[in-house]
Image (cartoon, rainbow, N blue to C red; front, side, top):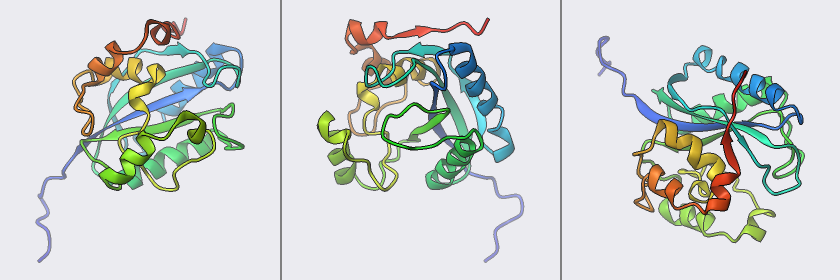
Length: 198
């Protein structure tokens, strides 16, 4: 039976984290992130909330210049895999290359969460969430894992996300973004500081 023409689209909230450490000039990296955000709407990715810009220490230490990070809340009407492909298309447009894990990058856009979705299943998610750091540095999943399996450990993600989705609850851990951010060590919190565009 054909769908009614006036049938309402179903929208899902999704959260993304943008980062750039293209150069040691943080203003240049911030401009790249701002320009990338300008490309979202033309791809049907509606930004409903945006965090402040943050300067964050490069991870792992010594891997390159510090990052500029920004979190965005989106309202989307497409599956998570389609949203991810659109994010990759924006990365490619800005010259993103992937020479190695955690290499310096012009633009990095991570899909952190898509509603309360756990993808592809809880068992696979928990495998990646519990993977030791030394194994993370050698392995990367070949499929979309949601929520991002390391969001709970990363100040550079949690602090910007606290601006846009403090009350979003992790569907496996049961903790809100704010609770996870508050639980960060003082050292981790100090590595993330607001950046003024000027």
